[in-house]
Image (cartoon, rainbow, N blue to C red; front, side, top):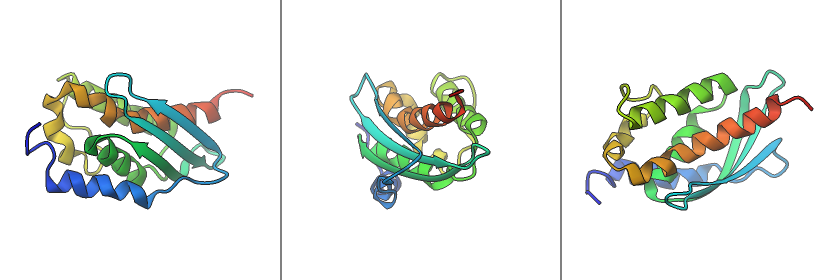
Length: 142
């Protein structure tokens, strides 16, 4: 791997994931794994009655890029809806596929070097996939 891929900014973001510990009693707990690289996340999401994220906790077992992505999600997801998180996730996937510019998620520009490493894309998408799945669960009719 390139030094540009695992730089000081990425590593600083990666350790930031510990600032969002699992949330006992969270409204939604989602456990997901990225099939290609084996990265895993347990994501706890609380949302208000309007479906806006009100809190996030997590346990991440991933490379520094996956951990950095999880930190970026957790830092900026509060107040977001399922529609907004799905749009962010889809923008990231499109960017990885070379179909658009850098996603408009705060701090995501720090992950730009990862675009050239398809084996890392699943780890980076994983936190966003988990957040979307959690909010879809809430939106599903009972």
